Image (tube, rainbow, N blue to C red; front, side, top):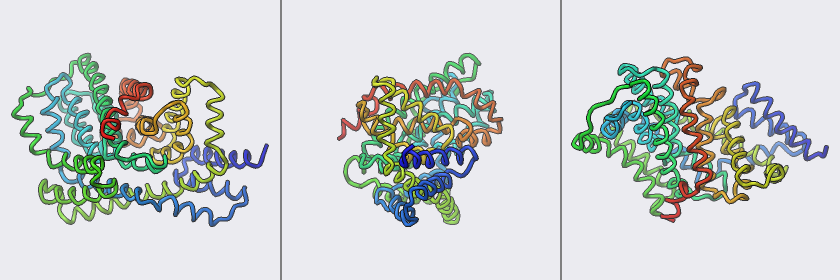
Length: 430
């Protein structure tokens, strides 16, 4: 075995062993990279250089702003208003509260950009409400956790910014636009699944639809929804960079939460900012350590070797696309979202582009794959949060989620093989 192959084995085997031993992902990434560098005889200064290089990016500054915006809006009393708006839109249908849950997640996801925040904020309100109205607790929890993945696709999403950085120059504005239709498609797919189950179990309908109530709730919620408009329109229109639009959105979110919705006072703002620092520190540690890991992968030519290995198995683009999704789904079962994006993108993106998949389309595929991974054991963070919020055993939640896994896989396949779904809006505006 050559020295290069042995170094690759040291890197990947040590990383895999530490993941199985349940090391924190940042430690696993950093220590496996350290062992690889030691084996190659490279200086320790390489570690410091690559860590600083990984987070020394202007576009990466958008991430803390988006996280702060989501925390402020999520704690600022807007959850109830978005639920009321969703109820006015779809509450009249069979299984009305399940539909409200899914549509509210679409609205809230455009503000928080986080599946975990969506599950914690909306789930704590909607799961008890659904149970009180006669819905099974496991079904209510399953709807909540699966619909929360819409927030990963609906902009603004800090995961899109991380992917754009990892992919090397992909337009953040194009990624934002590309997420809207897939997010809506995922919502429709989950609503169809919920409707079928609701019909079978005879779940109740909600209040009758009235246009007057819809306008009333829209008027109340417009302040929250405007935050998304500021970011997306600002970036797409060329008025702001992603970082600048995120900074403006933070100021706007602060004013709305404190002075308009009055869900936060200034003491609460400081607490929210403390929570943001906790979240941001995790993200930045992952990005910096993943930069070392990516450096090792690049210097050892792993992306090229992986591409040759996959293409060597088959030259059928359909099978290669399915294989890429399978790899991402398996990674999602054992790793969190940010490290998957940071580590897998440099390896898998060249393979995807070689079979004609646009980098923007592939970014949406990665994010949805990672979203499904958040719902799967053993490392499904959103699955654990949903189980805790709904007070339902995880095994019971997983069983209730099985039909919704099918809905999400169908959407994933549509996004993989019908690029127009993802590329329609970016092509239209750019």
